[in-house]
Image 1 (spheres, rainbow, N blue to C red):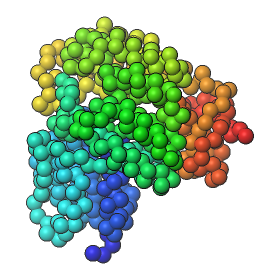
Image 2 (image 1 turned 90 degrees about the vertical axis):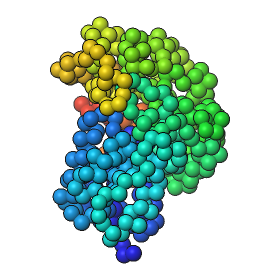
Image 3 (image 1 turned 30 degrees about the horizontal axis):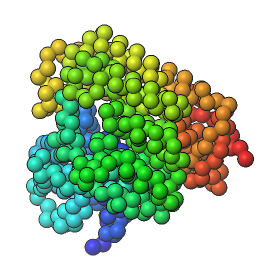
Image 4 (image 1 turned 135 degrees about the horizontal axis):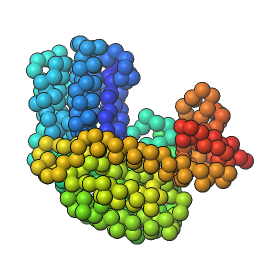
Length: 433
């Protein structure tokens, strides 16, 4: 096969990013040249998301744009939207392959098999009953950081969410296999690993192992200096996990813990597995041991039944726990979920207004968090990108720092003094020592 070009378009979460990177390596090993999404291509792979209707629409628009620009290119669509609505995607002009999440790892083979035998779009493995395989994945496009997939699927079935149907039941690889993957990442020179999954803290369902044991095993991998846990449910972040992260020299003080609502009543309607008080208690435990910890929080605004009182419970809780950054989602009805049939829908204009209020709060909270560290010294892992003569990196507690570009500092952990906070939220710093 002559050399061909392949492009990747990844929507949604860090998990999709790790999977796309793994698929890209397979195409490159097969002789393809990976090109940027905007460049002409022979094969275009879209790894889709379906967390909101906006994500679905974005995927459809990308498909149409690719086909206009590359009318002869093979277009292969996988991911959660492909899993949930395969026939809708297959009907879009230009689509050749729709591949469900169970067979995502077969995408390269399917593309090669398709070759010149073009016709109606081929749909593979897109029923929820078929989702049982674990597609091992980690990202390798960033010189400093890798996203390592440790878990897939979710058994929680929250009232607003389609992930259980799109990703299947909770499952994972054995710890020993994940340690080997971490060693591969270290061998490529990457210094930091972000641990990812659909419901990361639920690790161990298929192997009988525990998430804390995975963390301990990864902590012993030579060559990796930093670990971040990308997201973990409040009911799954145990004292044992918090205490381990506090004592470890590699696990950094940075947590992303979804809240969704600060109203216990709304959490019950959402079918979440904790109360507002439980959330407070978990964050208090983190603050007790790691007062410098960065706290990212997911919030859903406008869930059915959310009045001004419930919204303000959320607002006040976020202030109280000292969130560092908010990832805000306006409620989006997903077909087939219990939330669709719930009464007391919130008008979209009210949801939009509440989103704006939380965005303003997020800015205030981040500025308050970042300002506390001005004048102090912290370690930063610098990235390779040169932006107008500046280089960027993150402190252990996830403050984005910029310094004058210096190639000798790329992929190095350097001690810096945090000087000032700019309008974009970046901290100007000076390398010390």
